[in-house]
Image 1 (cartoon, helix red, strand yellow):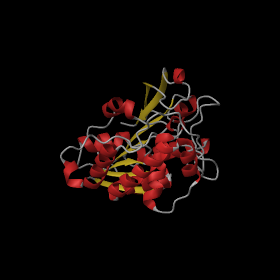
Image 2 (cartoon, one colour):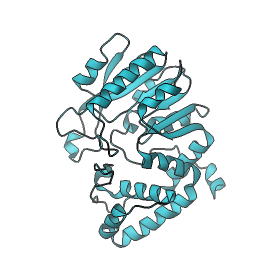
Image 3 (cartoon, helix red, strand yellow):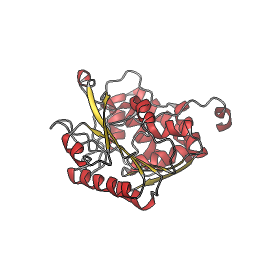
Image 4 (tube, one colour):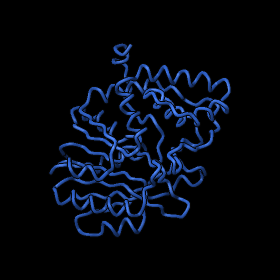
Length: 286
């Protein structure tokens, strides 16, 4: 089965919709990458748009990717190692969803599968069918987003899943579940570290930080800024995306850092009129 797809593999794209996803900004991010670097680190992996773009263009690139969301990290590993079984499981979800979308969605949302394939299948199914594709959990770590209003959601995107599986198996990629600070132990002079954390809220209602049961706080942002300074002193290339907020700007105000304001749309805002006209910051030390 796998061999017949090798000849027709499409360019891999994120297999989940994730708040703050970077697909629309790939060209800007590419323009801001250093000309050369060692290992690529991405400690807030999310949907992995930059990773997939990088591996498509630099197949031999060594990458160390991680996230604190264990379900997400498991999904990457499952797609890499068991894509056939995962696709079969998603087909089952699709079949039952088409019979009674509402009751099936909420039954799966309440379920707690133990099997790795079923866990990943559940994550992708909920992400494809929930309201606005928003991944959000409560303090107990339970997914709590209501059903979305879709007529025919793409639950089994087989071509893309196979493309993602192929590029993860054929590249030098290490996948880990860990806190972002752990990157300091591994990153060496000349390596590139890209941080795309849950953004610092710019308004009281713009708080998309609940990707794990522990939200990304202002203290975490301070930890991140300190880590960037330590990586800078080690001689690492550091690239950081964040919201256009004064707090973030102030943290990177010394002369080591270049701050660019770039235009970005918010694809996950529930109000479509508020998805455009936003700016965010792209900060780097090279």
